[in-house]
Every structure is written in C-alpha cells, then in structure tokens.
Length: 129
Image (spheres, rainbow, N blue to C red):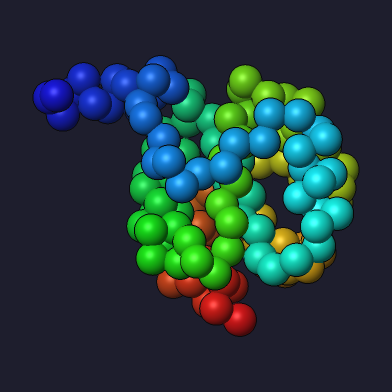
C-alpha cells in the first residue's frame, strides 16, 4: 500500500482499526461500561474527516499498545455514531469535540483533552495514576 492510498484510507474511514479497540455501537454499551465501574476506560472520539484526528489516533494507539493491560480503549466514530457521541457528552458533562480523549476511572471523568492537547505523555500519566 502506498503512503497516499494509506492516507486516503485513513481519511475515508476505511483504514483498519487495531483489534485492541473496543467499539461501542449503542448507548447501552456505554451504560454497561460505566455500570461495571471498574478500572480505567479510555474513550477516544474520532472523525475521519478531521486531519488532526488522524495524528491523535496514532498517538493514542501507541499508548494503547503499551498499556492495554491497564485500561480498556473505546473508539467512537463521531460521524457514524452521533447519538453515542452526544450520550458521552451528556454523561461526562464535557462539551463534544473531536478528536477528544476521556479517561474514566471507576466511572468518573479522571482526565480529558482534545485536539492538539492530546499527548502521549499526558495520556500515559492519566493511565498510570
């Protein structure tokens, strides 16, 4: 695959996701995750039409590969699943943005960031804290 075709796939939403991502599809999936109330959950909200999202996703996946034993990682395609994205905003009290990363600890917002504020170092600190 050439670099340009890979980039086109990332932008169009056809790029493959790591198998480590959990992909909640319905509001009930989110309710179950929060109800379990155990450990750390990383919710990453992504838009395939956003260039900033492309690079943020790569940062998050690097951390995911390193710490998938310490947190579960949930990928939400905000264009495909607007209702779930709105539910996350309502549940957390955080304004919707994309890219956006939210770390829940025992069901409560522990850390969040969006756009260029998403960094591997800060996400790593949030997961290890």
